[in-house]
Image 1 (cartoon, rainbow, N blue to C red):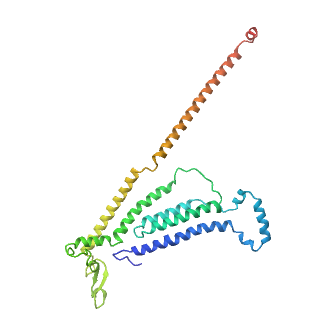
Image 2: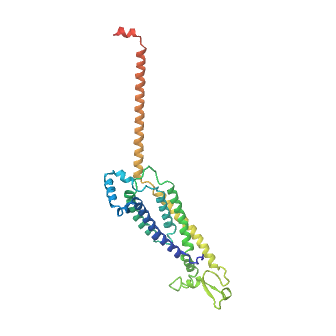
Image 3: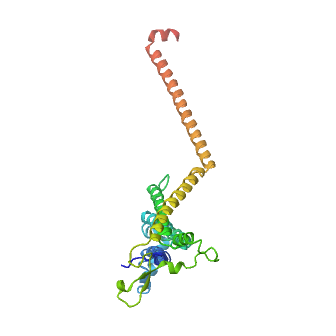
Length: 311
């Protein structure tokens, strides 16, 4: 495996991202749409072989109820695969967005297409799923939050170690006095970034130039160590700034709108009032029942002769 040059392997990473998001993602989405159709229509190829039997089957189908026809569709699968697909796509888009800026656009196009395909698949190609209540998406929310934090660190390292941004900035600062009279502050950068390999190192009669920050003996020069320090400082500053901004957004923008929270509070108050009213009604009925039982006991405890004299 070849090592990355000082400029980084950002072009190779961008190519891989384009293949994953523009090729594999659409193929996977298309396969998810085609497989239920094949499963639900697996006997359709018999129409050309046995037309008479197919006519009888069509007549029987017409007499079937909708739920009987729906039972012949493909069985609904667990949504774990759907969540996993979205999490993987979110990871690719956020972690390597610095290397391939078109990743969010391709993901948006894919999701718009998959949204319509999934709606058709769940309505016409799969059995009706059994619904159940859920407060949120569960553990997937924590996974997405962890992927987001990892993405901040990865993008910081990609910008610092796989691009020419920091080397150019450091070169412009170190040689600003020399290039002050020139309009281009990066004049001589390409020649500076190419190290010289002596004939004793290569075995050739003429010296060779290669992309590195080394001296003629092959050891790293002072600029390389300055650049490494600047890169590490950039990673730390970038990470803290981005995570700080995310934390501020999380503080000032609530997860639930105020109108929705107000409606939930009102519903809780109404539910508590109904429960309190039910308890008070039960207490009234229980008190009435005890009074009637006491009166019945008193009447049964009286002497029958007294009752007859009153009559």
